[in-house]
Image (tube, rainbow, N blue to C red; front, side, top):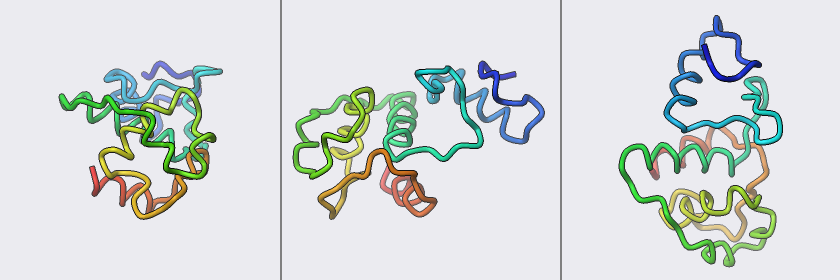
Length: 119
């Protein structure tokens, strides 16, 4: 079982979702509490999951949000995600060799792979 009403416990991913929720890596949609398993996730949502995972491994994930000032779209980073995205930028996981972060854009598989390798 998962804490999310929209995740069928019989689905192939339910055990992974339950683990990620129990460890605090995923928290669900802040407005609805739903996991939204059929939706795409944004780049800032993925940065949040990576930061929470890194923190579970014992790493310090504090960051100076002013690092976002170097990006043309810094103002489009959601308030709840600023610290996570700033951490990803400081760690060289996100925002490398670019002047934009595209925080609310759906993340691509290629971007996920790149960010995981950088982590």
